[in-house]
Length: 173
Image 1 (cartoon, rainbow, N blue to C red):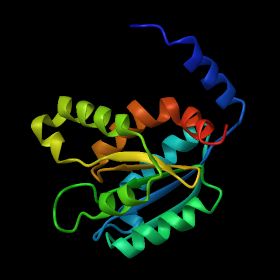
Image 2 (image 1 turned 60 degrees about the vertical axis):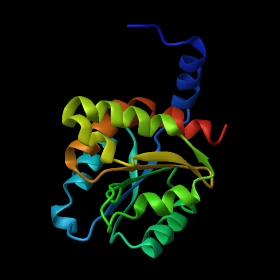
Image 3 (image 1 turned 135 degrees about the horizontal axis):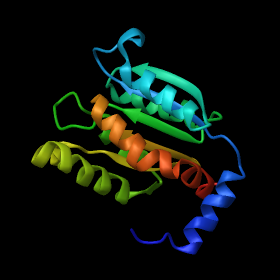
Image 4 (image 1 turned 90 degrees about the vertical axis):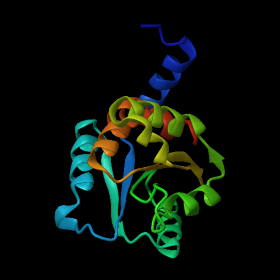
């Protein structure tokens, strides 16, 4: 394993001094309910276990106007990171990516690239069907993952949890 560059480690230390990060969860689904939204339950547990807190939760349909409205609402609130799950595929109803990609002021191409690489190790070539993405919108980090529980788990454990404070700090420093 290679050593972390000193600059990145210093950034993580400065970010940690900012304290817990308020995170919003948005589940985009035409079929899930608050009672069977396993991604919300998983993310809430993991966010809190990492010392952060869930600042908001929304369950919306994959309708462009709903995606845009909730993005605007949450970016104007206290959340420093908004995690969307669902709507990243290529089926006709998958429109979350299309809305978010038009709104992001800065993109983090590495998030989607690394996510698909990690997914490839688990699901093979089907990983190319994901349009997972991340970026910044109004000084808020926005992440969009597929809606499958395994995809949410991979995104949280491998990408978001290790860098959550760093991500949130970078957009306000």
